Image 1 (tube, rainbow, N blue to C red):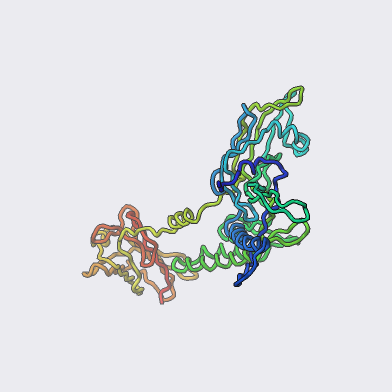
Image 2 (spheres, rainbow, N blue to C red; image 1 turned 90 degrees about the vertical axis):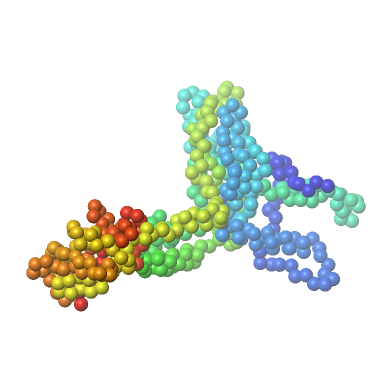
Length: 447
């Protein structure tokens, strides 16, 4: 006996076959015991438990959107808007599956919904008998009965046998709706605090016109992160992100049913996902009231949400966080500040001609009351090829309490090189450097 279900019949079949969505209860499981008599309600409870778990996972940890397929096209010759096969997730966690092409006759649709489209401002008249239409295509869950089989009848019905549908097929209902696609439901978790932290959203104000305190907190944290030292920034970013996700999870709540009862999901089963907006559909209307399409229109999928697999996200995250390979150049650190000298030490041998010739170094100093002073300096490299002594020229001297800034050039026309020819890579602890080198910059107070 074939076991495949007639999804096409379900998607386009009569309304009489449509049934309420199958029950889901993720928090009540069947407890079996020896000799237990199982009835219809028991089997339904078992299915409802697993179905509910899947829907909760889909709705809250993946969200609503297209998984694959569901391309939308419009064809003026046939007056058809066609949706190709595909898979999506609905706002209530349902898998919305379309097995084969689904078609909507724009002319027939407009003949039934002309007043609605006109009232929505989606149907604009141009020259006599010519119109421009804007619509959007949505999808939501549809379940219908299929696979009719013989079944036992109730004794009081006067018959021993009857027929009943043995399967519920789940697919999607596709609809054209007039006008621009709506914004996603307000209950949809959008990581608002995270988006503020990463600069993708601005803090909002409350009903009294005051900036929401936690929004301002995230905006302030974003600013403070820019001032964090490089060696502490990653930990500070992780702490800020943790705080933002906690605030977002506390703010999320499921949607409400029409009767006010709380849902388990972000929105109800009939909340549609948007597949595309079709604008500039030009049509003509003849004297008999029939509509003809004069153009294919413009299909815009910018309102569609597409869900990415965790495998793809892992690959992207790996690429985004991949640590650059260091070119291997030497790195410097300040060893000592004296009145007339600054001592630097390298972690690898240096090329002496690139250290002592030209002006690859600068030393500047200032006090709280004076401007920066930058005297000439001379450089000497010790026999170990790692210790550099910078001597200040003339009467210049570094006093105790002076703020001192030392720069060694790993870039520019005359960079400091290592013995192996690799340019200076900056300071110890700096980020990886490229083959083009990095300047060493250190600023500290002489003690």
